[in-house]
Image 1 (cartoon, protein in one colour):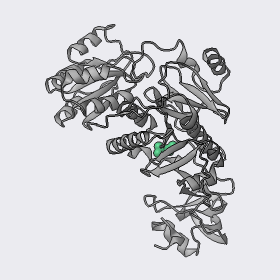
Image 2 (cartoon, rainbow, N blue to C red; image 1 turned 60 degrees about the vertical axis):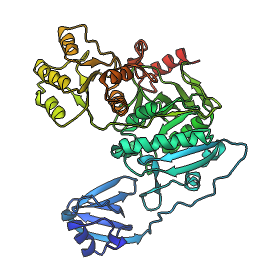
Image 3 (tube, rainbow, N blue to C red; image 1 turned 45 degrees about the vertical axis):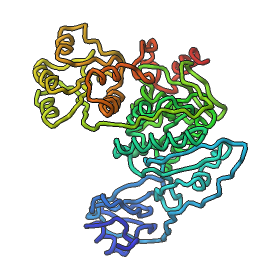
Image 4 (tube, protein in one colour; image 1 turned 90 degrees about the vertical axis):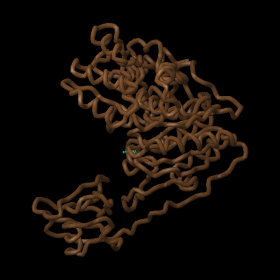
Length: 460
Ligand code: ASP
């Protein structure tokens, strides 16, 4: 199909043809209710065939049902420029080398402001063209490993990522940044915390909640702070670097095993759960919020253990769950189940026989809490004790996703369930902690006065 109708099909395509309107045409679209002015945007291969998408003058995109369109007049035509002007990333022998691995997500895109298309920007030259501040910090190298939205990340990608991180560390890189979609960034952050241990340098995951065609995009600031963290920060752990408050002030650095995406659209969506974030970063540097982190070292010794058994699942318990949910996992050959139970870690009584069958079949079953904050405590009620007798192992305050990733990683190493249990209960980097910060869950919501007060108290 010609680029004039990129992605359009069905009645939408027929309507464009009928009124001789093209993708990138600056048009007036008349419907029986109103007239809309804007640029016709291309559509993705999977989009429906019933709507025409217009980028309005306000910057917002709207879909107009083709069957409602009475007329389209093309007043102008703005040809798309998919290429971002590349400027050679300046090399400064005094600056450290930082490696940026791209996996995809919104952060890997930027907008052609003239046409409204979101296009991938990735080479160092393209990044420098859009975010020149990066050159103040380091000599940046980039490698696009994947170009996927993060729901498509999985074991194959985790393993390759861990291996490439190991290779770059051995080559002496000063720090690593991973561009990633935000939706499953916390899954990848936790699995990398297990697969890549004792890193001598920071490994910083970064994304953006708003695409760069929005004036409020967080992409540039997150990227600048992540690259600064990789180049200069003293914390040599797998971290997530994302907006702290809702305004453009600073980013928080979250430990990879304790972080979670908590809001579907806020830029300040990532929160450290059950603990204090590691630090905050802004243009002036780092304010460390704790001192028990692993520090940057000059050696290149890193342990890479990139294995994963995919036959695992998370079961989010809900009232009236039926035992066949557990049975079907067992019958289908799953080797491990993480339950996100209610309250202190509960499921209903009808599930007990199924848990027993899972135990007999040699399936590893672990309990976490769907409240996210707080600990599994299976000694408090009889129900918890009963479940432990049926082989369910409580995982203290491990987040369900961090537990799921760890179980896949543990079963990738051994089938011996005692050994799996030893691995699960032995914290690698904060996935189980002795206690939570007092009232931390009430205040870590970003930007509100009591957060600053709280953070002020604990800041070193
Ligand atoms: N759906 C996207 C992803 O996770 C969202 C983002 O990049 O923030 O890949």
